[in-house]
Image 1 (cartoon, rainbow, N blue to C red):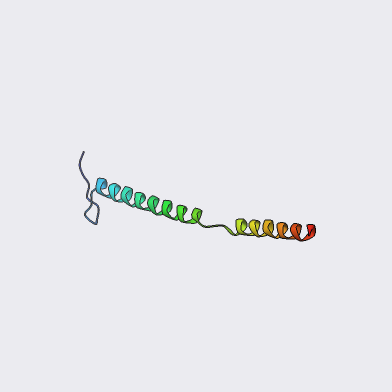
Image 2: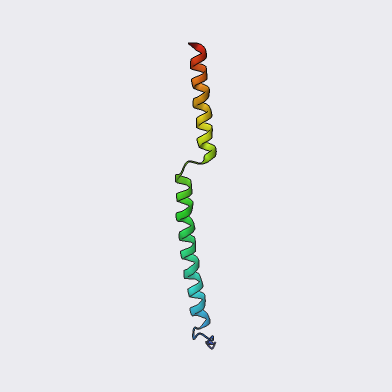
Length: 64
């Protein structure tokens, strides 16, 4: 099987290896961003806690 050179001087195998390397770096970056997003509290979670605390305060005031 002959190795065909592309205009930029890379063989098909070299180009595939570059693409695979780039894909691996993209996947690593996606994993980092996913961990960063999951480590932060979401707006829905924050508002849920605020509603729960507010309800507890109202309940305590009603009892006293």
